[in-house]
Structure formats: C-alpha cells, structure tokens
Image (cartoon, rainbow, N blue to C red; front, side, top):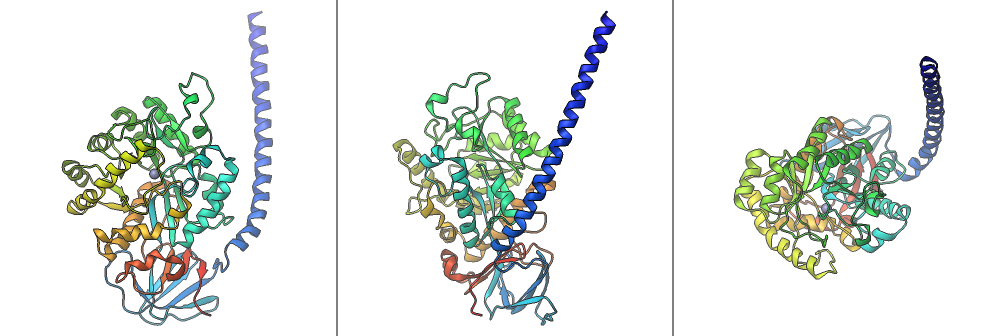
Length: 476
Ligand SMILES: [Zn+2]
C-alpha cells in the first residue's frame, strides 16, 4: 500500500516536472519571439534616434587640440580617428581619409572626453516629488526618457544612477530606442526602516509579515530592509536586475523627514551583508552618508565609496585617504541651485549640509582623496538644465583643468570599480587610443574658461557617445 502511494506520488511529481518543463519551453519560445519582435522594432527606432549614426563607419576629427582627461595642457593640433565605438588613432601627423571616413573639421577647437555625473537619478531628477509619488509609472518613464536625451545633450555621456527604476531606460538607451547617456544603475536604494530611503506614506507603516510592498518599493525606487539577511536579499535582487553597484543609505538625509541628519543608519553587519553580496558579484557598495560616524561605520563594513560626506571631520577624511575610499562629492551650496524643500525640518538640515561643503572640498584636496563629481539633482526640471553649471561651481576650490579631470578621467575610474559586471567595459573619461569614443568638441578652450561648460547648447558643437554623433552644429 505504502509502495503504491509512493509510486503514485512520484509519478505525479514527475508529471508536474514534465508539465513545468513544457511550460518553460513554451515560455522560452515566446520570449524568443518577443525578442525577435523587439529587435525588428529596435532597428527602426535606432535609425531615427541616431541622426548621424556612425555604426560601421569611421569619423575623423581634424585639427583639434585635445584635453585628454588627465593633463592640464591641451595637446598641439592633432587628428583623432574614431572607428566603431573606439578611439583608434591619435596623431599630430595627417591621418588619411579612407573610404567610409567622415571628416569633422575642428579648426583648432578643443576635443575632450564626455562628462560623467557620479550621482544622478535618471527617473527622479526632473519630476516634482508629489508627481513622482502619485503618477502612473509609465508616464514617469517617458519623462525620464526625455530627460535622458537632455542629459546627453548637456555633454554628460555617462551617469552613475544612485537610485530609481532605471533598468528599462538603460536597456532602451543601450539598444538605441531612446537617446541618452550610458547608465551605471544601482536600482532601488536600500534603506532601513526610518532611514533616508524610507519614503513610505504613514499608512504604509508598520509593515506586517506577508503584506504587499509599499509604493516606493513596488515601483523600484527604494528597498526597505532591516537585518543583514534582508539587506543581502535586497542587494542580490538589485544585482539580479542588472545593478552595476549597490547604493545603501547609511545615515540621515535632507529630503527625508523621519530621520535626523546626525543619525547613523544600519549596523556594521547589515552594511557588510550588502558589501559581501556586491563583492561576490565583482562590484562595490556606495553609501549615502554625511557624518563622521556614519562614514566610519560604512568604511569598517567594507564600503568603497562615500556619497556626500559634507559633515565630515579631519580624522575621517584622513581615514578615507589611507583606505583609498572614493568620495563622490557634490557642491551643495545655499544658492540659486539649492533643491526646493517645502518642509522646515528639511530646510534646516539643508543649511547644515551647505555649511559643510566648503570644508569637505578643502579636506578632499588636502588629503588627496580620490574625488568624483556628482550633482544629485532631484525633483526639479529647471535644476537639471544647470548640470554643467553646477560642475563649473567647483572653480571655488579647483582649477578648470582639475574640474574637467574630476568629471572625466577620475569619475571614469570610479565607474570601472564595477569590475567584471561593468556594463561598458573599456576606458571611459579619457581621449586616448583604445578608449571608448565619448567625445565633445568645444567651441573654445574650457581649460582657460570653465564657464563654457555652463552653456552646452551653445558651446558643445559636437557630442559623440560610443562612436555615434548625437549632435553636430558645425557649419557644413
Ligand atoms: Zn542622491
């Protein structure tokens, strides 16, 4: 009797497995059909989105002076040949114009690497917070696609996205469906309950076991996780979706009303769980943190990059230098580009952060900390137009050449910290042979006049990303 029961059960298990594998095969077939359909659509979309697509062709920049991303001095007049998506050759001697080579006459203008923003939010940058929290997610994605195009047209050829549902947008850009920058996505930022990423409505808290996700979690903006196990799970979910690095909220923030700016968030074991998940995937964790305590705890847990850090002290800056920790720092100041904040608690916190910015840049310079440039623009379409102008503000602390180096070669080095899951393997942020061809032709010399980058519409005459020209306003 028992044997018969056993046999029946095993047959039904095998039956189920058989059914499951049939379903899987069917699903795979459907997926292939969908992919094929997608490819057909994309071919058409790609053609329209790349006005002077250079796929399979070569482009020769003649008579340009190069800012290579590293050296303060511009090169003597030179010629730069781009083949496919790579800078193939740089020479002060003439490069022959072979068949299939299009020529761009630089006439002595400056050729420099595309700019990189290490703290961007592609979906949240230009949308007011109440809209972000209530609108149809598809509408938000369409706005994000338009903003992505604007971002590239400002000369930012790469962004590191530090939170938000950008995996679809990134895919659409990479496939040529939408025009935009390269995106290094983090996916949802991971936050503890009450942390800087806890934007839940009051009626969504407390979360009960088995309850459905809150709105910001369901749409992929935030992932609330408490305990090392939950943090590990959330980190792995982002990696599965294609995150190139993990973003964790490790301390208090300005825009979030439920946590003091002085608060330290997570415990060392919780942060370490994310670090282990990321490092097993070849990549790293960056954290939002302002205070010495929050920064120190994150470093002890193995974090490789600190975002913000305006309230840092000297011993913590020294620690960052000693450990080779990256500092993704933003010129937050009490000026016309201060983020719009309605709530007085946030306004008070913002003033504290603004007051720390000067000290932070001075310490970054004093201890020669590896520093990346980022804007962290949120919730404001007007502010997005200031992306280059915000970079130019670094003139308070750096020479123009140092500013340009930070937003190209240096920040490009931070992108490469993503290791074997780097979505864009190759050199970014430099003009050198073999590097990825992300290039700007500037009308003038930004090493002498950094203000040129404040007005990309006027001064960036050619914008190339991955060997494709997306803007060319040179007279023909
Ligand atoms: Zn941010």
